[in-house]
Length: 313
Ligand code: NAD
Image (cartoon, rainbow, N blue to C red; front, side):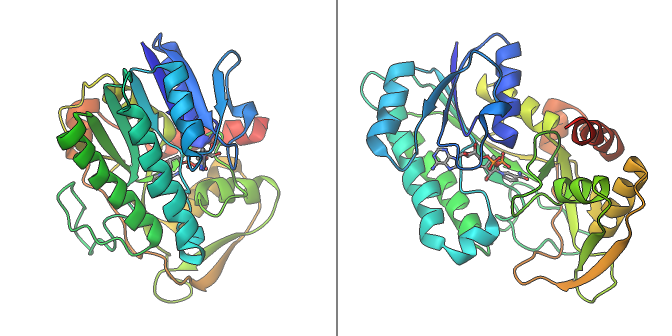
């Protein structure tokens, strides 16, 4: 069976590629290498170096490789970039996404299942104290990025109804693990590991006032995300939309303390102010995930594996 992974050279996509190869699939990657790296790709994977915004190149890649399954991980993946440049976000995540869907439903296409990397953080908005966002929680994206992810989810439904394309939407919590880029705009775990191992201080931005524990997040290990993707690709998940998270609430301060303990670093924790646009509390209801995929990796276990990777780098 052939799987095309868009964004396969990126952090999460590369784990999907590795998982798909070990499951015995024939794998190709479509990536423009804007944030992805060739070094993330195992040897022998076919690469289509193409930008999703280039409609002809996208149609050509799908027509050449003839995948049955498509894992759509490529995206403009930064909330803050989307705030600064909403048009660019829409061009990649919506127009680029439409090019991919048209390629998947073009005459002669063999694609029968698309799995989409959506977001469980930016799509639900603020999750009140004491609550978790299930898949039917209010959809209140507060950034162009959240809006473009929601728009693509809706487009998938339309392509399903009118062109018979099957799909599964995976709404990721905050993903962490090996190969996450600490120099990007997001990924506090990567940023903290990078700082701790270089002996720099870790900054905890406030949730409401300087010195509080910072924002609350649901951190999920990338191996769990790759696992969910593989099951979704083979059509084994019984839900069209599924949260991919741990369901555990962690403040940025707790995270900083755990990373300092894991690395035995001597860095200190500094406290910064509230950052505009940050959601204060984001936490997923992972009942569907646990029923279909079992327990997620405990944070300490995932952090230990991640620490090993950053040390070896
Ligand atoms: P990443 O930046 O490491 O990976 C994105 C990949 O897409 C890169 O390889 C990049 O080169 C490629 N890409 C970007 N624009 C492209 C374009 N126009 N054409 C072709 N390729 C393009 O990011 P990631 O963290 O691995 O995220 C993967 C997916 O998961 C994204 O869709 C992101 O929105 C989603 N997501 C990530 C998180 C997280 O915590 N990392 C959370 C929720 C959702």
